[in-house]
Amino acid sequence: MYDVPSRDDIEKVVISDVVVREKVNPTLVPRSAPSRRERREKSA
Image (cartoon, rainbow, N blue to C red; front, side, top):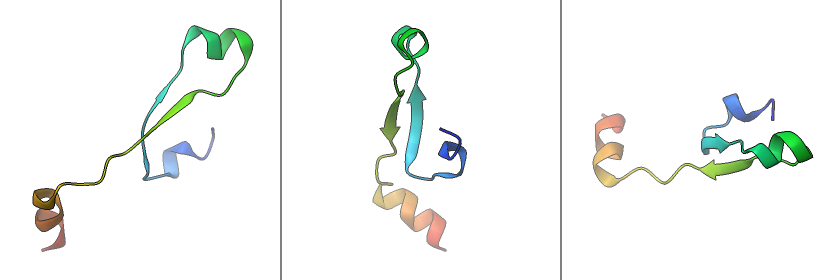
């Protein structure tokens, strides 16, 4: 969990009441691949 802020592949972390009460791992939602438009803007 402590490494999540440095990971670029994670969009968000979902923490529900079950995660807190039962001490299970939260759901990690992966970041979707950038669209072609976003890639062009960043590459120049």
